[in-house]
Image (cartoon, rainbow, N blue to C red):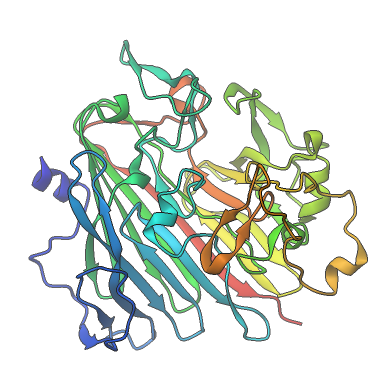
Amino acid sequence: MSSVVEQAAGMPDSSRQSGASVTIKPIDSVAEQRGSQTESYEMVDPGRNESSVTLTVDGFGTVKHPKTGAIETVKRFTWQNGRGMSVQVISYGAIVTVMKVPDREGRVDDVVLGFDDIPGYQTPNNPYFGATVGRIANRVGGGKFTLNGQEFQVTKNFEHRHQLHGGKVGFDKYNWEAYVAGTVVTLTHTSPDGDEGYPGAVMVSVRYELKEDNRFEALFKAVSTKPTPINLTNHSYFNLAGHATGHEEIYRHVVSINADKITDTDADSIPSGKFICVGGTPYDLRIPRELGPAMAKTPAAGGFDDNFCITKGTEQGRTFTARVIHPHSGRVLEVYTDQPGVQFYTSNFMPDPNKNIRPKAVNAPEYYEVTRLEPVIPEGVSDPPIRGKAGAKYCKHGAFCLETQNFPDAINHPNFPSAVLNPGAHYVHEVVYKFDVLRD
């Protein structure tokens, strides 16, 4: 199964020489190893004159395999380009842990939420920071579906009624295999037949690469031995002001999404199969809107957690999906994908320790004068913040997600784009995160 599936999925052949010219450089002996025995090295591709992107590989601790208990070494991959942007990914969960991006003044900040170590990523309150989730991202209504006349019951890990992000032990809970070619990293994972209730053995891969022009690209692929549903995504949480700056800065972001409708859902965010045209609703983000006031217009001012149906031409592939601006820093994020939908989520279910985080219809003028951090939080609160990187306190509305995807619960809705992957076919999902700065 393994060799056949690797070839079919376009996986790298480790015995085949890369076309890139690679130089291996030792890293300073004081480099942090986090308990890993993995050799540290830097990979530079001097053959690509147009690029000064480098890739460093080291360790990020160890994990136990969730089924066998075997101890496995987690690898960390760090890209750096000539424009001051750097990205880190770990093999555990194929997680994006760091994205450092310059602002208009050249100051570099980390703009994704996450943890400093493996124990952080394994805490029960980790809301999938940066993870690759599957076999099915988002929800499976009722935790069941019918495929080719057979009903399948999958694990329920959301309100004991539905499945969320692949189930109790989804793809984000495994340490993926890693292949490096030049400055390209491909991570692979094999999900056995019956895993979390799904039919078919599936091999998935995600190919990561940072470009010199501040594009970070992810390419997901999958093949299966039986018909099975598949819907992968990356679950990075962004705050363009800096990962620790909280909800006040999120409310200042300006957002536009290329979608003229959303999928209608119930209180559990399970689609009804119907669509809502965004015109005249709080979900009309076709014109750039300040995020705080836009969130204030959503039901109960709770924020966004909705699948936006991307507007694209017939047979159009990679399409402009969303643009987010943080005016104070000047940072801009654009997202492009070949998928039909994007889940726009504003961290509504992260902790609200003081029970006072709520967007306002109009941002106060002082919002634009200085960056503030989250308010003082008393010890012993019932809903404490998530402790993130460098001691950051992550709270409600402290980040946004743009999860490119098929429509949620597509396997249960014949009028949605098909989520079924058949033997001999290839699942392919492209997404690009392009960073830039506003220019006066």
